[in-house]
Image 1 (spheres, one colour):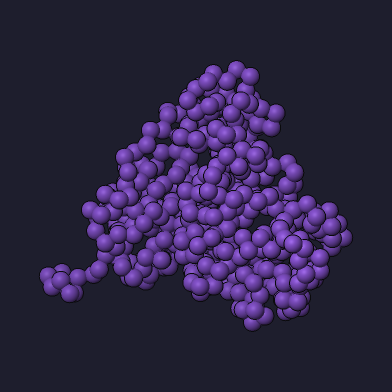
Image 2 (cartoon, chains in turn red, cyan):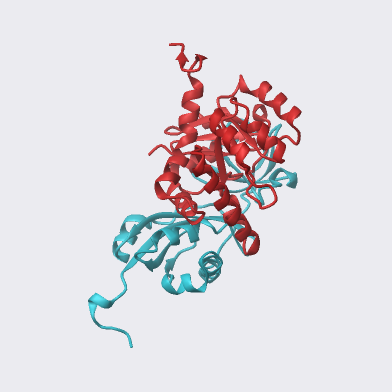
Length: 225
Length: 179
């Protein structure tokens, strides 16, 4: 199955694109999407092309504290990169990201204080924005903080299912040591409350989104061949 | 009393895993962390249903015994470990087997040669500079001069490949790993 993973490469992470590609290929991924906040500064992405059998896509991640900055970054990056993820920081930016059809993926911070709202879920459904679940807290946190994260994740998942939103799971790896094999990630997703089939589809979705974005669209449903 | 009837015996599976770490990990440290992760994730009741036992561990590859219906849980336990005694690690499941023999034959290879700590070579590029800590095939672990380079990811070393560094240094000495 063609599993894809979204991650950060050096200088925002601590492993180069080629090292991540080498590790991911060994683990059984079909492709990687590098989502750095400064995608033009990724360290030697051309070195990763020498690793055969895995496709590497440079996408972009936006982390903005206000709506104006978020919209500016979306406008600046959309034309150049085939994959655009938004890290939800405040409730307003989450809502603004859901209302923008240019956004591919919204990584929602699963904490109790900033719940995923019904209005955002409805907007995400309308604009086909996928909701990303970052599973790294399941690996990094322990005890009560992890229990809180699990509770918030289950609540967000319930809402995403209710509005039939597209789901994505990621380990949000910052180094090759954070990467997990697809089956291990699926096992973690099951602990977080995902169904097995749902989790497998969520791990394949980023690849499908990149494939769709690489086509030349003249308008909704009209492709230039 | 332990049952001698084969039908009453618990069915076991063996998980072969590979450990990637920034330092050396002892088997007792690893098992301590696996148990801690299991208790944290599934609690005492969950741990009682799925008794884990480390069958073998050679520093890189290992074999873990678990109950046959809790394979997914065991995978999640291994995947949720990210550091042991402050050393960053990654535990990756290689496969699941019914017998120790088949697991050992198929998935526990001979230990690959990893060069010793700090092999004395230095990398100086515009974006990154530091000492090479270890190399393994194409993989290169680099200790950066600027420790802020690994900030945020909790790792000690930068993970690079020889493709990143090939020809980057003016005095590249033509070694087999291309540095």
